[in-house]
Picture 1 (cartoon, rainbow, N blue to C red):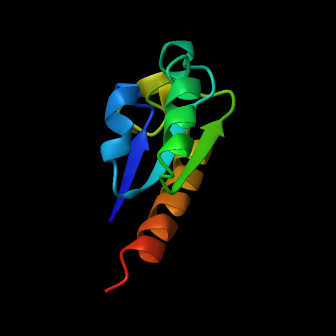
Picture 2 (cartoon, rainbow, N blue to C red):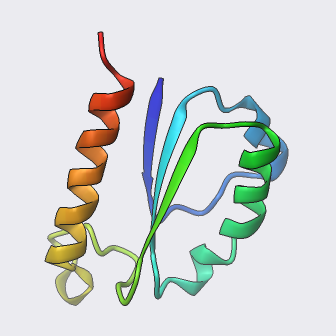
Length: 95
């Protein structure tokens, strides 16, 4: 019923219509490689009427959530992303 992705390359847009879960998508603002895949993905999500939310965390790199990632780790962005993730799951996975 719900899925959360962190700075992942978007799936092929022809596969987006198969998504049935609500989506929470977390992107690193400085990750130009992954962010380049975001606009067509978002267009496809809209066209498929997928329930989704996108957050872009400014001034952080790919891997900002990984506390073993050294300099890429961003405690503030990671904390906010985790709070948003747990709230999202609580909202969408009620029994």
